Length: 156
Image 1 (cartoon, one colour):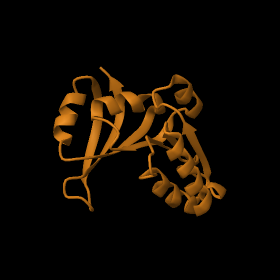
Image 2: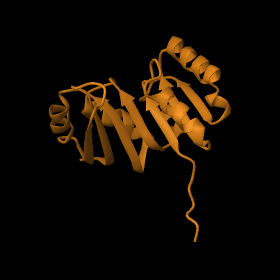
Image 3: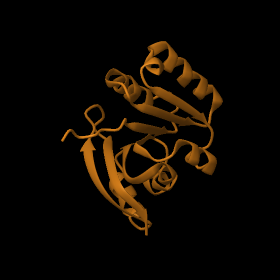
Image 4: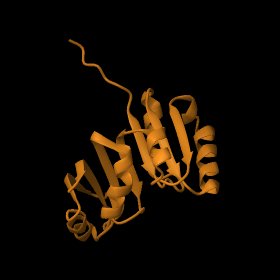
């Protein structure tokens, strides 16, 4: 039996200048069939994200949705729906980030969060409010940076 794969839906919260969201979008566009949602409340940054998506051509190879609004907005969360992957960089401490990302995560979602040297403290604080499994991958570009992968996130 041939496995059935559904298109990947990646949501980047607080996309700002497009890292990691647009970089991921460029990589996803090569395989096609994916959906990229960038959530950014600053309209100037949203316009920049739209222009980069257009000028790189990724919007012709995958669905790119730029949501101009607050991450915590229930209307935005409903509109976007649960994603396969939720990412964020330099957005908030982990306990706040898990709260913000929760509206975009389903039971099978993975959170990928670029974090700094205080990650152990952030994890300890977040574990007071949330249960989750995680893996930490050291950054290849910044000695103090780390990539945190979380799954099975639920509020205690």
